[in-house]
Image (tube, rainbow, N blue to C red; front, side):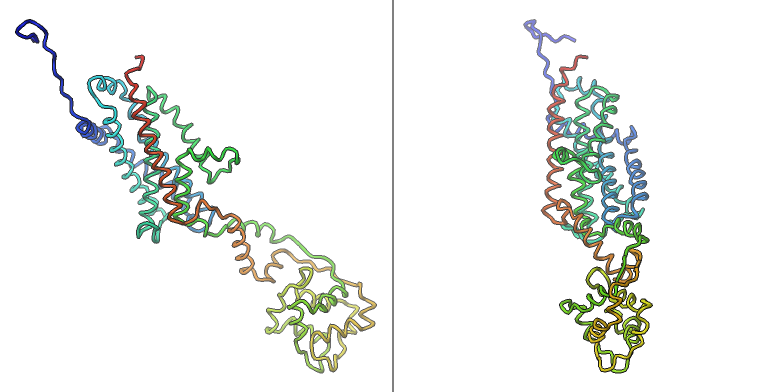
Length: 433
């Protein structure tokens, strides 16, 4: 074809390229066709399978205990990072040669990356929807009202989307850096391990390296999701296992006559004062007074009261009545003594008791027996409350400001990795090959 002017000089060909926005549409359409015809749609069933396995394995403890929920939340965050990472880890490097030629022909790097961002956002939204549906079906349900929407499921969905998309943009940047898919897939496991170890949730890391956790996507993602499910208000179930381990351990020691009477003479103790004021009648024997205290329903609450030295009223009275040397005393009538305090004072002054002041019996019981005396349900509730308070994590507070802070953290990652992708791909013409 003759490209000369009338005067014989060569004409300069005018090549027109679509503008930046036009190129975005062209490449976005190309990626949609790849989704259909090059099997990129397979990322959706893969996301469903992974979510199903995680939900089936860990969903039983979700929403019931603090540690079970934290483990499940960590696993879901891992699923999102996995999905996002493998969405885009190969998308640029696998067609690097094509991208290089098109860039020399007028392709705008910004348009190319933005079209990838749009396509990957659509893919991440689909993966998030699939993940939440599958988790719901296998029993890991996000029910209730969210802090920002009427549905907790939607609030959590925003978090899952941001985690997935941030991981996607990180992988997109890596894909612009490397020159082959082999290199990309070699780097990917190290990136995932870094994200998981420094998440700051399940794995304990030294304080000196904790700032590194702020550089991970998993850290703000886990914090946001743990806050949304209000993990701090859940019971710490490990306490039950610890109590069960020591339930049969024996505790106790020797209790003497003098110790029991000294304890029962302590009128400054409100429990003992209440016990001493109980009326016992005019014709009762010492043994009858003790039997009443041990058997009558009206004294049930008093029997479990703890005296000085971690001895209950029931244990003290039982120990006193089991002493064989006091049989004669136990059968004595109290006469005009009308209160338990009067009985105690009478016994303390009796010569027979004084001669056996240092005699005693061994009282042994298991930890479980002691808890039953006090009240197992009440005791376990107090222990669990104390454990939950000790395990309270301010980063997991169920507040809007806390969640927004973590969302912004993830958005910053998305923005930074997107900018880095544009920057690094701009040097594609410098490839040596």
